[in-house]
Image (cartoon, rainbow, N blue to C red; front, side):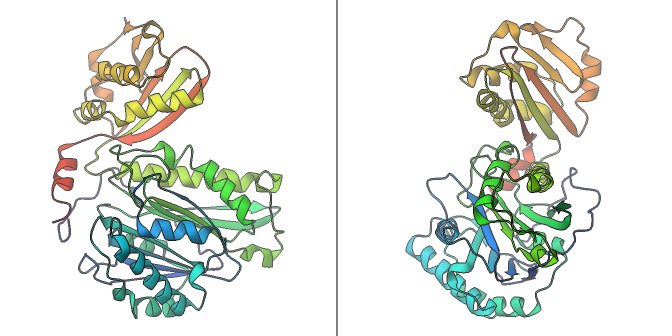
Length: 416
């Protein structure tokens, strides 16, 4: 894909809200020439002393070297620097990958003035190609020297691969009357399926929250956001979602919160979950070749876990996704996806709707079904599929996109 012009997804935001600075965080981007030419491909975030980190990573049994590095450093809890590069995933690179992350962290630690164990790394791009960490020499030092509090879209652009638009979001809330900021970026367009983060995303806040509480908030927040989004059913080797809290709000009087269930975090928890969901939905809206954003809601399941399995079965079905691409309300394919999920389901209790239109009920086509009305709805950019199993109270919502010819074209020559 390097050097090729890719049209921006029609589902991209028409405008971006202003993303405020997060006290205690400064960043810069640069061109290291890792794969792409004439575009930034390195992002360095520098965080104040006292910053704590939380993280959730891929469940792949073949994780990248940066994922291994982050997991090890996360046990220490503190963070001073984050280095992210695009164009090379540094995955399936053996001993060379381990040496590369070590050298990258050493270069970053020297540039920032911190310990190597306080440096976190993430890489995205081609799998199987060694990453030449020497490219970061001088680059990270320069980034550290000119790091500042914005603009966030620059950071989001630097970590893009096949993405067609940058992804960033922010919230401002109060903790015990003290205003705090939460801001984050994400990247992802293909090789997107849940089982932890489904891409790269980095969230920053100036809130004073203990590391264990921060980890709990993130782990719970991912369930209905990044673990509810899918583009193609493939989980990356490099999936990384990290949340950094600088604690700078303590200087304005916010007391450190150590318990995740503390009532003082109620507004923060809600805002964080909203931000995670917004970023996750932006990933689905930028699915490779996507033309439609699809929400799949399953209700009436025997449990929430069962509802999730069924919702993801529908959202990951190539037949369902290609039907949506063709603007065909083919509920037969939805029935297929429900039936193959291996979860409790009774054909004659099933009801299926596309948007506000119920197309099937009690195991057969709805007697009031209108082909013209349904076809008109399927022309929309946002498509909602609802399935009621009629068995219990379990529910889950998944987010995906359609599957078009462009997906094949993009992935057919990704390494070229």
